Amino acid sequence: MTQTICKLFGTPSQATEAADRLRATGYRQVFVFLGAPSGSDETEPAADPGAVKAMMDAYIYKPHAEIYARHLAKGASLVMVHAYWGTAQKAIRLLKSFDPLPDAIPKPPIPSRLIYNPRTPFSSTFELPLLTEKVRYPAETIFGTPSLTRRPRLVTSRLFPILSGGASPFSGLFNLPLLTKSKTPFSSLFRLPLLKRR
Image: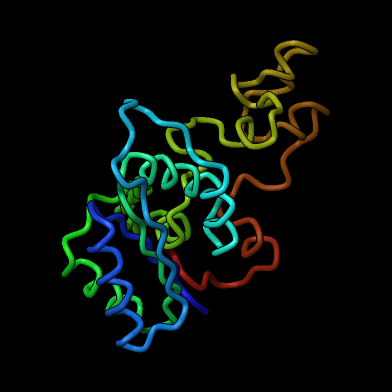
């Protein structure tokens, strides 16, 4: 596994010296792309298709190669090295010692770290957004179905009146007497002592 490192330099001599130092240090896949001798008078010169192809042959992404090629047209020179795993930082330090130009390729923004919340351990651990954050009826949000219990007694109030508001709706509906009014029906029925009174 290798990491590709690219640095732009203001003069061809800087780029050549940096590439020679990389090769002397032991890096084998080093590429140098020298810029135009005097640069271009245009504010945004066009990228040379030949330079773009040469960079792509050295395994530089085409969008990046086009950006580097425009810098080459302005007079800058590019040094690229494929560093094996564990040797990339050494190559970066070596290239920085030759005073390179600022990076032409913008770095992707670093995502903000989510604060770990013990109430949402899975989302916090894997930095995933909550599906039901600040949602009163999460099933509606996840499945896209309306809630049946959004309002109390929605079904009974629309279709038929409430069967009973009492504590014994089945007995009240069919006018049946209660089997017992005791607070401990099981113990009273079988005449068993209470295991716990409170």
